[in-house]
Length: 223
Ligand SMILES: [Zn+2]
Image 1 (cartoon, rainbow, N blue to C red):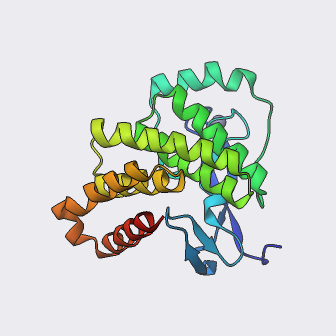
Image 2: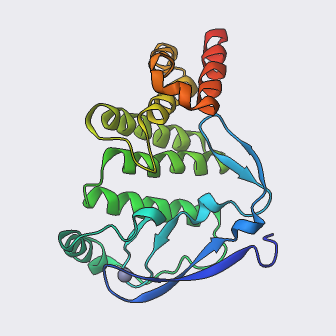
């Protein structure tokens, strides 16, 4: 059960339909990180903010990661109205989200992101979270399906997109491709990508990541 007061409601103006709605968020002051998996899935005592990382407008069905929610242009608004809103039945994601509700929210964000032709790394960020949520749900097939999609999207992004922004950088993308490969038993790919990270001089400015890569490189060598 969620501790009372762990969640709060935030008012959002939908950039597609223009209506106001509320979404739930976890209070930062209540966050207690317990641990992180090697692909960054964070575990918390109580509510996990990953569950609330997608905003869904209950009126028109537009959904996106919080940090991308307002980044939609005129053309994108028209696309969402035509392809999503016209078929949308009013549904609210307000309040405590179950894993299933959270997965549904991320799937909507993925659907909208694909329609809007978002960048590969943005779609990859949604897919890796769908992988995490399915891990928490203990659905291994779905976890692997979404991590595999994330790996493909991050590979495309690594070679084709400028990756120096707040939600992704080339070294983190390369590390994630390697780590997802390791989890999927693709040992050669894992080693190739871990080496890519370790050979990059930029890694010296990210000690925490360098430590993770060296650890996972060791793990894959021993597997
Ligand atoms: Zn809306």
